[in-house]
Length: 159
Image (cartoon, rainbow, N blue to C red; front, side, top):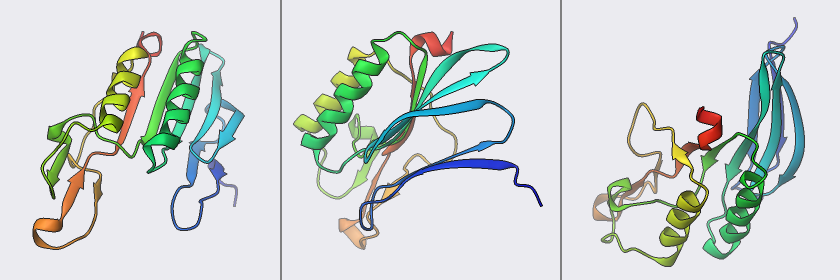
């Protein structure tokens, strides 16, 4: 039986990380042109539209390592190719994206994430389903819920 799906994977680092991209065979041509532990960048081409870039993200839990990712995506969007950036950013933008645990503080990593989104003019594509995409699975007051997974698009991709 022939498969209807194609895949591309970036291996995990131990028990975390890893990126898996799936797409329906024959819908588009997918060319991978960069991958590392935090991202895979693919050019999506269809006969009836201009090519665009899909960047699948699994950001590091270390904000100093995430800075590299922010810069690489900034360099990518500066090339003027319509882009969608989707995945686990391992950071929240605001207080309403966190529930439980210690009180929200506006740490440097969160400010850097907001600056990255703003500097690149990225538009949050929103979501359907649960507000929070991650939970630490602790009990009682130690339980934390956050929205770490999201999809952004460049303004030219939206157009």
